Amino acid sequence: MTKCDICNKGITNRAPGLECRSCAKTVHASKTCSGLTAKQLSALRNADSLDWICDECTQNSPNRKSSFFIPDEEEEEEEGATSTRNIMGNCNVNSEQFLKDITAELKKVLRKELQPIELSISLCGQKVDDLTKTVEAQNKHIQELEKKYTHLRNEKTHLELEMSSLKQHLRNVEQQRLDNTIEVIGIPKAEEEDLDLISNKLAETLNVDKSQIMYVERMNSRNEREGNIQVELKRVDQARSWVQASRKKEVLLENIIPKAPVQMAKTKVTLRRALTKANKSLLWLAQQKLRPAYKYVWFQDGKVLLRKEDGDKPTVVRSETDIDKLTTTTQTGGQNLYR
Image 1 (cartoon, helix red, strand yellow):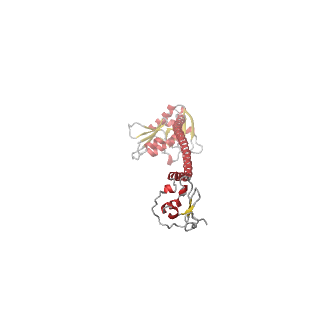
Image 2 (cartoon, helix red, strand yellow):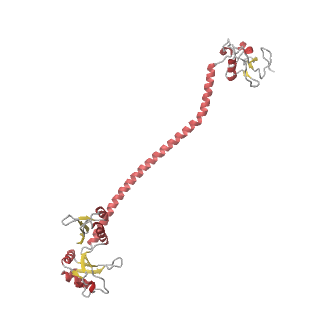
């Protein structure tokens, strides 16, 4: 058993001791044997960086770790009292070194604690940089796509205009091929009919030159209806003459076909300039949608023309879009003319 060099009593669990770190002298950790107060002893117990050196070794003792040792941990019950000696002198406590050690330990702990945080921040920063680059690349790509879209939209608009112009040109060309052709409406189809005889009889009735006739045929029709008869003439002015003559003189079926059924004998036969399918469709659509608002709807020189009242300037319709723009709910009388 280790004994106290002051009272020669043993160092026990209830009576822990202090060991001089210079000469290894051992005394009880009490005011009587060590000459320290309870607060000084408590500081030595709780601070690893404080050394205790006996009075004989005070002058030459180096700083070492805590001199406090306890065989078994036990609460100190000794009452404290004011000491006449300074703990800094008696215990050789180096407060500056103590603060440095505390600071160094704190730095180590903080550095250890902050290291994963710094790593996470670094990784987040790298991800943010990568994301920023990706966003910039996407924005650049979007701008390029917007430019391409604008270009394609402009190209589409240009092509639509060209297509519309081309369609209109083709319609005009097709219609021009029919400028010298007239349609005869109101003559029913008969078995083994003689179209040449019918056209000659029509010319005689209208008092026009039948020698201008080049070709006669009956057109096919939809919905099992009888097709009209087309008469192709040598010149455009002759086609105009035939139509004008039909307006001046009423032509009945019995004038063309003497043996026509009695119930059809008084059927009126009309003539008009021949139209292409596209122009027929356009004219029909104009009739259906615009006749309530326009008094006259007719076809002339490759165009559908409209007039609200006598003396008004005609309105030109070249496409279904024009009809949609002119559609109105105004209810007026209507009349169709073909010229």
